[in-house]
View 1 (cartoon, helix red, strand yellow):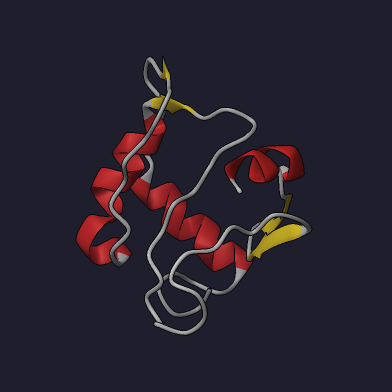
View 2: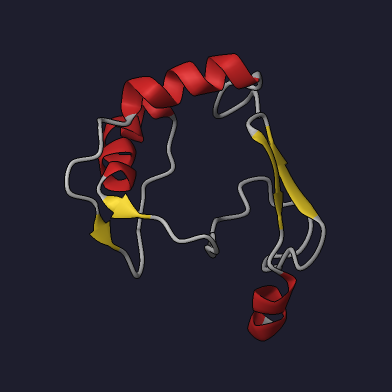
Length: 99
């Protein structure tokens, strides 16, 4: 937060609202492959992608290790994931099935 996207809740909400069009006919979704570059580069296509997807209650996020610090591969398997928009509980059972 604060590096690739705004670090404050209100600023992030405004950014996302400008990128995500109103949902029109969202479809049941099995998987989404979304770009993750800075909003100026890929925000519009990511917004359109998520506007057309019915996002389930539990999701799996795969992402690269941009910093090179820590392990090459990891699974966050308990606790909460915190963003400027709030905290999200980790689906411990689902994470356990992955590892």
